[in-house]
Length: 76
Image (cartoon, rainbow, N blue to C red; front, side, top):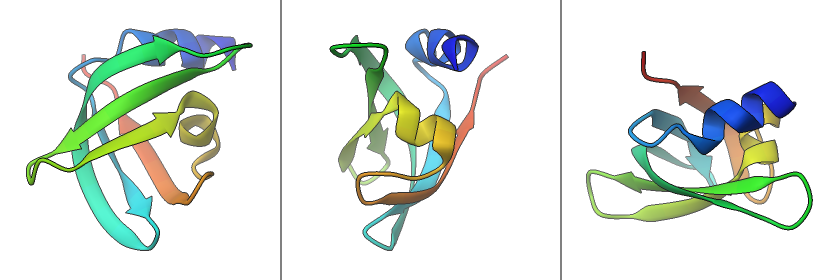
């Protein structure tokens, strides 16, 4: 878990795909922030200007908080 969260914390510019409330999206991580405990939150913005706040644990697990089928495509 720690390796994934550490990679995610510096993943600005990487792409994320998934579904929010059964609506598909594909966007780019624009910002990350530390949360209380051992988690972070990323902001993902798509080409339509919609933004999504997703917890790192949801990204690691592939779902959570209304999100499903989540995938991160790390740059590099």
